[in-house]
Image (cartoon, rainbow, N blue to C red; front, side):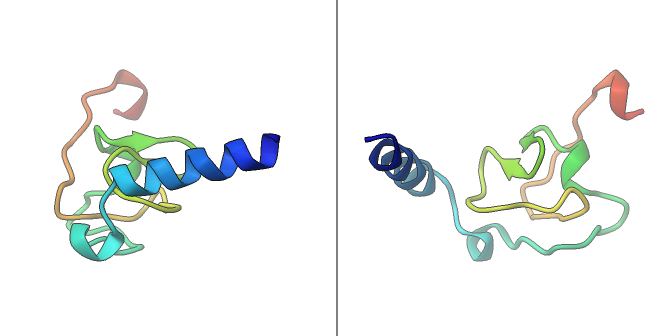
Length: 72
C-alpha cells in the first residue's frame, strides 16, 4: 500500500515538472548562479520546476536569486 502511494506521488510530481533538458539544467555553477540560492530550490536536492534530483551547485535557464538571509 505505502509503496503504491509513493509511486503515485512520484509520477504526479514528474508530470507537473519539466525535464532537465527543457530547463537547460547543468550540474555545475554558471556565472556564480547555483540552484541552492534559487527561489525554486527545495532542500536537500529538489526543485519546484525541474524533475529529478538536483545538485545544490547546479543551474538552469529559469534560475532566479532567492533573497534569503541564510544565503547571504
